[in-house]
Image (cartoon, rainbow, N blue to C red; front, side):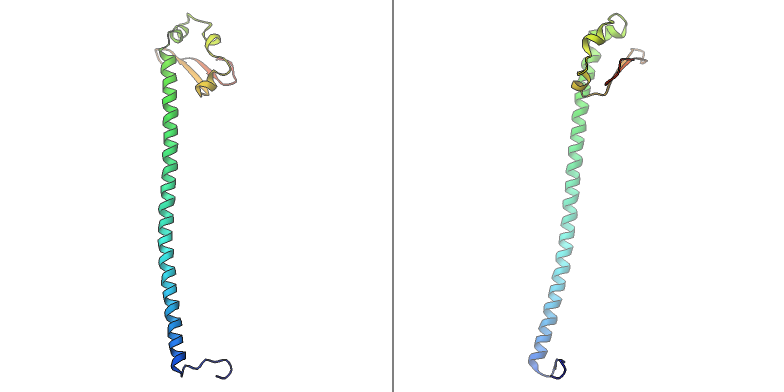
Amino acid sequence: MRGGAVRLNSLRNKVSLYLLLLISCAAAISYGVSTAVLSANTRILNEHNQQAALDRAQQYIQSMQKSLMVSTRDYAEWRDSIRFINGSLPTYLDENFNAGTLDNLNAHFVLFIRPDHSLYRVIGRGGQPT
């Protein structure tokens, strides 16, 4: 060996070079396969997590919708609400809607609608009835 050059004349050097090439190829193939498998599994896991988050959000929205429907039905069918809309119970708002009522209902406003579907009154958080 002169000047740091490797001589391939000996059988030992040739076998070592072939083994090095074989191991390098095996490592490259292994790396490629594992990268492909991990990428696919990561994508599947991300899709699963996104779907789970979407399902939780839908369940929350449905729960809030059901709660709002119960409150709406309760107030819509309540005889005092009907009397208020018909004008025969002017103290209804003072007796039934205080500062925490909308918070307890988890609502931002309440609409009172006449039987003819026209708007009678609106109550909002932090404001006076209109």
